[in-house]
Length: 298
Length: 300
Image 1 (cartoon, each protein chain N blue to C red):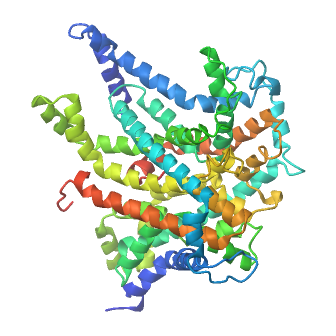
Image 2: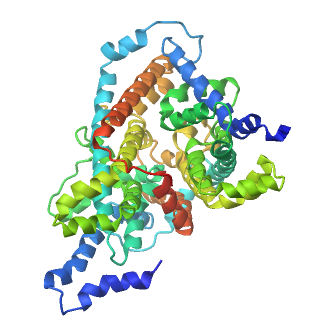
């Protein structure tokens, strides 16, 4: 992006004294003041959580508004990591990673294949199935939750990752939609040319389309990662052994019991649980912003 | 020269098979099963018995907690969705100016919706609005000393959930920002030349041009607001309290299904929710022709 040009534009009114009235001159500053204060209010709770994770236990609520700890209480991270009844956060993070990585691979791969089918191949009943997919996008999870639970309990999948991971391998409508939008921007001429050269539909998909839609696959993978990482209700339903808990469900354990005493440990682990999300955001920011803007993904 | 591999119907079904199979197993079959359960007393341990419309009758006339939960849910949806969209649009318009540092602000506003769905944030929220929490601490600075727990008081608890939802306006803001950028500058310039003020330009140009995006956001966010579960569960520790004041519909359904194993009753609740959400989405679509403006597009 043309940052220098933008900067020039921004400082323009302030530096040209000839025509700028004083109201005009102050406008950018007023703008920054309002929008900056609001931004501070927005991120203050996040900063507060991080700072609380580094405060000694007695200090967290004595002057809660204060963001600066009197000393850095790294022991919160140690005591939080120790977890509950012998299950440490090593276990919980490992569980989260297993669930998230396998789910994401399944979701993205299956969605890409389905997206190509819907976007490029004319077949009987396509409109019907596409309609079904669009409807699924708006379907409240509550309606399918109970029979799914009954189904998974009947085939003995309770207390395992399978009910959480396996459905991800059957294409996620949002991702299919996102990838389809992307496939539509690839000129049909490319397909035709490949067909002339004797390429089958499979060949076209794997050799022509797949390499070109990588950006949309990255976007889908990022969102899949986020959704699975944050997922709470599925682990809550299907995992009842703390050994299998992912981080999201393990954090809830801090709130169980009659009185919480390890505040620092709780804030420390809550903060750590957000680190992967932040890391991916800062690395892939461009994909995320584009993904949201073009498809309305949350 | 139709070869086997060029049979589009077969190839099409092969490519879309993952969706179709998944749809039948994980959506279609469960929906039908759920509809059937809703007319039974299924409790997970014994075979279901047909009870006709009993579950629905109980829901509508014999379950005060159900209506409490409906009221809480509508309060939540009707307050959080419009507020969130209004904030998103207002901030998007502020950020849609060529002033330095926009990228930084954009990230700051987006961060809450990035992490808002996580359990970590819900846990943090319980402490922000707790009796000795961040909010009361700031109020103390202003000379208002209180030890009210905003989470623990029936009157305010649902508003902390609404605040949590509105706090996450960032993703809608990004969508609006993209929409604003796509409005041709020439439109505003022309209106400016014709002497239209900022307010007039907003109502006559910005809003109509954004209306398809607003409709899309309104529908998707309303649906997801009706389904909100995690923050209510975490903040009320799975109970929906105090005095059922955070008993969102999904949470009540979960309690009925998995704490009392009343799968039949919970399934009936799910179908009422599905129909309600469907009707609301339909109404929004139907009214959209009066307020949503679509650019007439040629072949592009």
